[in-house]
Amino acid sequence: MNAVDGVSFEVDRGEIVGIVGESGSGKTMTALSLLRLIPEPGKITSGRILYGEKDVAQMTDEEIREFRGNEIAMIFQDPMTSLNPVLRIGFQVEEAMIAHQRFTNKQAKERVVPMLQRVRIPAAKDRVRDYPHQFSGGMRQRAMIAMGVSNEPSLLIADEPTTALDVTVQASIIELIRDLSRELRAAVILITHNMALVASLCNRVIVMYAGRVVEEGPTRAIFKNPQHPYTWSLLRSMPRVDEKEKERLISIKGLPPDLGKMPPGCKFHPRCKFRVDRCFTEEPPLAEVDPGQQARCWVLMKNIPDPEAQAKT
Amino acid sequence: MRGTLLYIGQRLVLIAVTTVLVSSIVFLLLHQIPGNAFLNETRQTPQALAAELHRYGLDLPLQNQYVNWVQGVLHGNLGESLVNRQVKITPLLVRETSVSATVGFFALLVTVGLGLILGVLAALRQNTWVDYLASSTAVVGYSIPSFVIAIFGLLVFGHYLYLWTQGTFYYVPGWGKLEQIPVPALALGLPYASYVARLTRASMLETIRTDYVRTAWAKGLKARVVVVRHALRNALIPVVTILGPLITGIITGSVVIENIFGIPGLGKEFVTSILARDYNIVIGVFTFYAALVGLANLTVDVIYPILDPRIRY
Ligand SMILES: Nc1ncnc2c1ncn2[C@@H]1O[C@H](COP(=O)(O)OP(=O)(O)OP(=O)(O)O)[C@@H](O)[C@H]1O
Ligand code: SF4
Ligand SMILES: [Mg+2]
Image (tube, rainbow over all chains, first blue to last red; front, top):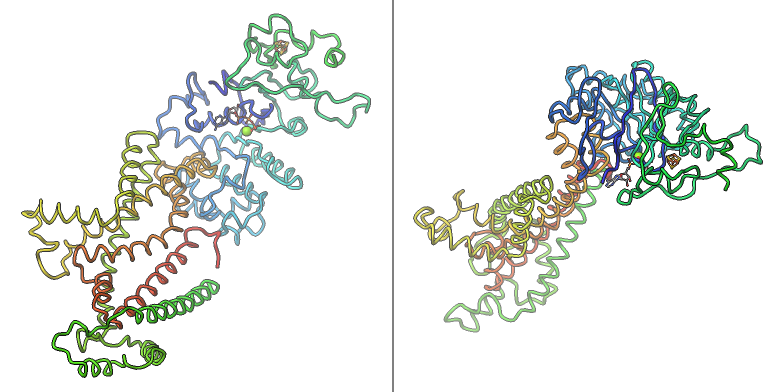
C-alpha cells in the first residue's frame, strides 16, 4: 500500500512552503520520507528523494545520519512527547550540535544558552538544566526549534508545530519560525490544517489528497484561483470574515479514501461535485494550469461556469 | 536533595520497625514449635536439661524471654548459639551475610546483565531469529525453577566435567574460591534474567517507537546513541521498578541454592538452625533477612529518581 505516491515539489532557500490537506493525506509521511524516517514496516518502495543534487533514498546510513538535523531539521507536532523525558533540555540541544561536526564539543556547549535565548525562552541560563516536564508546551516547542536550528540547516520542516499548543502561544511560535528562517536563510516546509496561516505566511502552497499532490502553486494564485475541486472546497469550507452571512459554508462531504481501498481513476472522484466520466477510470496527471501553478484534475475549476450552484446540488 | 535525605531517613526508620516486627513474630512462632535445642543431646538427664534451659533463660515465661531478647538486640547482640556453645551470633551472621551477598551480587549481575542484553537484542531484531532465540531462551529460563538449574549445574560441572573442574563445587570442602561462584550465581539468577529479558524487550519495543526516539533519529545522532541514550535509558525505568521484588526473590531463592551447593551463607544457616531449634540463630537470620530486603528495596528506590527525573521525593 502506498501512503504517499509520486509526490514532487520544490522548495527554495528563504521560501516558506505550506503543505495542506486533510488528516491522513500523507503530509507527515512525505516530510518523514525526506529524512528517511518512515516508521516500520513502511519503506520507500521506489523513486528518488532529491535534495539538491543528493538522492536521500540512495544514501548510506552514515550519509543519511550526517544529513538529518544538519541539512534538514524537523519539528514535530507534539512537543509533549517529542523531547526525551529523562534528559535535560540543554543537553538535548547540545547533543544535536555534537552529532554533526559543525561545532567542537566546547563550542556546542557554549552555544546552548544562546540558542535557547534565540528561541526566546525566558531565563534561558537557569533553564538549560531543566527537564522537559518542567517546561510548558510552548516552551518545549521552542526547545525543539532551538534543537532544529542549532546546526543552521538549509531546510526546516515544521509538521503542524502549533496544533498541540494553546491558542495563545500558537502565533508566537509561528512568528519565531518565520523570523529564524529569515535570519538563517533557510527554507521552511510548514505542514498545517490552518488555511489562514498559509495565506499569511507561505510563499507557495502544496495541497495533498490521498498521498498525492493535487495542486501546487503560489499562495496568491491558489487562494484566488484554485483549480482543483478539492482545493476549491477546502477554501470554501474556510470561514471568512468578509463574506456575506447568507453564503453558507460548504463542507466537503464524505471521508478521504482508505489506504487499502483506493478508488480507481481520480482519487477524489467519490467526493467530487464536478466529476466527469473520465474521472472514474483515469487518474489525471499533475499538469500546469497557469505559470507556476499545477493541478491534478481533468476538469479544472476555471472551466466550471457557476461552481457555487453546482456544489450545492 | 534535602527531600531525598528526609525520604531515606523515613524509610530507614520504617525498615527498622519492620525488622523488629518480623523478628518478633518469628520469636513468638518459633517457640510454638515442639522440641528445643537440647533434645538431641545424648545421655541427658532431666536435671541437666533443666539446667541448660535455665542457663539460656528458656525456662522463663515467654514475655520475659522476649524482653531479654529485645534488650540484647538493641545492643546489637543477637545472643549465643544454643547448639555450638560460645558462638556469638552477630559476627557469625555478618560473616554468612557477606558470603550470601557475594553470591547474590553475582546472581543479580546475571539477572540484570544477561536479561538486559537478551531483551535489547530481541527488541532491536524484532521478529528475526535473534528475537525468537532470545525470547524462547527467556521462556525456558523462566519456566525452569532455579533448584532444577542448580542440580543440573552440579551434574554438569561437578560430575560430567569433573576432570576440568576438579570438583571445585562440592567435593572440595570449604568456601571462598572465586570459581565456586559462577554456577550457583547462574542457577540463582537465570530465572529472573529471563524475566528481565522479557520485560526489557517489551519496554524497548515501546520506547523505540516513541516520538522522542524519532526526534533523536531526526537530529542525526548515531544509531548507538539513539539506542542506548534515548531508547534504552527510558526502557530501563520499568525494569528498575521490578528490581526490588527481584532482589527479594534472589535473597529468598538463595536459601535453596545455598543448601544445594553447600554454600556457608545465610540461607544455609536458615535451614540448619531451624532443624537444630537454635532459636537465637533462627531469629537472627530472620532479622538479617528482613533488614536486607528492606535495604535492597530502599537502594532501588533511591536509584529510581536518578533514572527518571520526573520522580522526586
Ligand atoms: N504508523 C503508521 N502505520 C500505518 N499507517 C500509517 C502510520 N502512520 C500513518 N499511516 C497512514 O499513512 C497515511 C498518511 O498519514 P500521514 O500521517 O502522513 O497523514 P497526515 O496528512 O500527516 O495527517 P495528519 O493531518 O493527521 O497529521 C494515512 O492514511 C495513515 O493512516
Ligand atoms: S479529476 Fe474529476 S473527480 Fe478528480 S477532481 Fe477533477 S473533476 Fe473531480
Ligand atoms: Mg501529520
